[in-house]
Amino acid sequence: MGLFSWFKSQLLKNIDWTDPSQNTMVYKFPMEGREIMIGSKLTVRESQVAIFMVKGKIADVFMPGIHTLIVNNLPILSSLLAWPRGFKSPFTADVFFVNTKQFTNQKWGTTNPIVMRDKDFGSIRIKGYGSFAFKVKDAKLFLQEVFGTNSLFTTESIVSYLKSILVSGISDTIAESKISALDLACNLMEFNKLAKEQINNQFNAMGLDLTNLVIENISFPEQVEKAIDTQTSMGVLRNNMDTYVKYKSAEAIGDFAKNQGIGGLGAQLGTGMAIGDMIRNTLSSTNSTNSNKQNDSSPQKAVKFCPNCGAKNTKSAKFCVECGSKLGSDVKPTCPKCGAELNARAKFCPECGTKIK
Image (cartoon, rainbow, N blue to C red; front, side):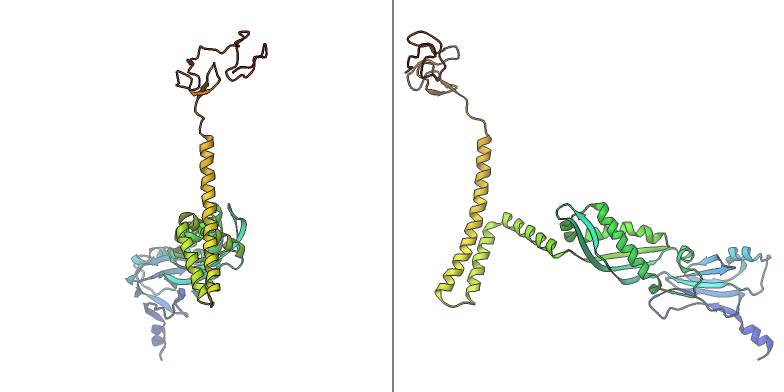
């Protein structure tokens, strides 16, 4: 091969990249001492961004499409290299292809339990796991903040760091939302959205976008899970006692199938009915107590006493129901012996001691 042929082979006329893997985020095109010709073709496929770097500085950025590399298409690079107008000589630059597709099904999980303060159970430790998806949102920012000068960058290079951001963000979201353990377990979809919005701010700062976050499970200590089950069961009992009683009775009959003899049936039925009666009576007693409290708290009916015989009469009565004496607010009882004024319910005169009929 002649010198001219060798020199010609070192000139790049076409620059492109196809990703044979599923996890490459950034690929540095191999230059190996070769130069790029003015007028060369640069092919950037969908879900790719091509970035030229010269003298350690990021220059021009190319979006998907076929680009002809001329001075007009390389304004930043032309400025950095101080190209004269009409420059046509080959040039040297580093070319990076950034993969902007979504990287899905990235697993995450809590290495250590997350401590949360719950209004019902106090301070408890929880664990969780799930998956997430992300992509490069700003290729230039990603190269500046994360990539550096590597020749190849894969998801394995950053996923462990992203997982730590996720767990930290979820912990902060739980603390700020002050959501209870019971509500958290029952509303994972809503909490997913809340956590994603908060964590995505940290992803954006690196040029990334958290496209999806899935919290598949939140687990609690055994004692807390039992307490949640108990609260749920009590809620069912309050809402439908008859259904629960029927269920326990049917359960007792079902258990009888495992035993033989009439005595076993009687014992099982008796147990089921006794449980039902006990719970029903408890709730009835509670309702009765509440009703009595309401009745006791109601104001007593107004009454007035007869000035003659002291009998109790309704406030609206005009004559005594016992002796027929006229009732009125201006009539006051007196002692029949000494004439002293008496209390309406007095049985003896406070002056002379005469017994009042």
